[in-house]
Image (cartoon, rainbow, N blue to C red; front, side, top):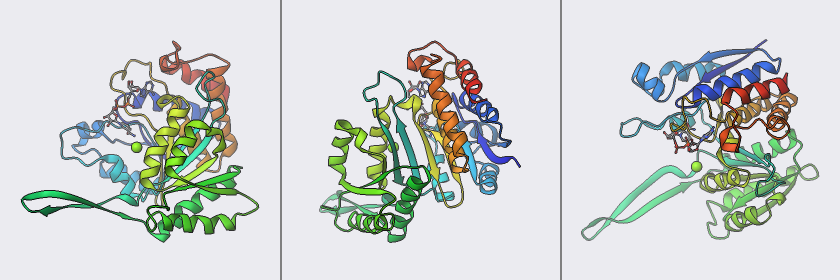
Length: 338
Ligand code: NAI
Ligand code: MG
């Protein structure tokens, strides 16, 4: 039986990097049934909307999408496609793994998976201005909404992820010393769930500002990290930066109704169509999709192949200091995977 996946090539370098990623997935020996769908500017050009119903329906049925980067049309009334997808499929967990891959990076022993709650907190968008005297915008007020159920769901996901992937430790990142309720609830739920996993997964907790510093000073102390929406937004970019930035940073959006896998970077219009984009981040996202499907051995094989292509075969795209084309890199990884 093939795996049924919605494939969104996306904009800019998207079609180039997803083509190489599909090549690598085909080389794993698994069977794939791809349903290619439009989103982003490609979809606006073809259908007048950046997220056509056909694309949503495809993801709803297949529950799984591999997505290239989308260009956000500037100056139109369209809502962000990524935000629409997050709401539509209740994509509650955003996963960002970061592992030292390229030798000579700033750190040699980083291997972190940051798990961010993606639907709650300050990002619910409940905010308003309060007028005082003649100033209609004298005060701005924003309400963070954190639910016990939302905390349970993301923290349990993090511990289960740690078990499934043979990880040792989960760090709960919070600001419960100051935000005694919205962050306190997250910590309280986290500490209770941590007890359930005692003896299997170690756990600690850390205040977010200290955590930001510890990540720079001693990143090797972290394994799986779990945190609320805004802290996760900020720390996930910090974590990507520890291991060489965009070209190697994948992400997964895990949801109730579907899960969507993509690179962290955007559509890179400056290099689109030139055949020089680095497809490694998109391939690493595909490896996360394999993990999600329970194909852990194949996920590991794809990651090892990417590493071997870069480190042993010295096949590197321009952003990694090499001269290889997108296709040459894809060929090198596919050969290692086969
Ligand atoms: P970007 O990530 O597309 O590019 C930033 C810089 O990194 C550029 O110099 C680009 O050439 C380089 N770069 C990015 N990916 C690369 C790769 N795989 N290989 C080699 N070099 C790479 O960010 P930017 O320029 O801010 O955004 C461009 C468009 O992408 C915007 O419309 C933005 O809204 C969209 N975007 C979409 C995302 C998504 O769909 N998930 C995420 C981030 C941005
Ligand atoms: Mg962000």
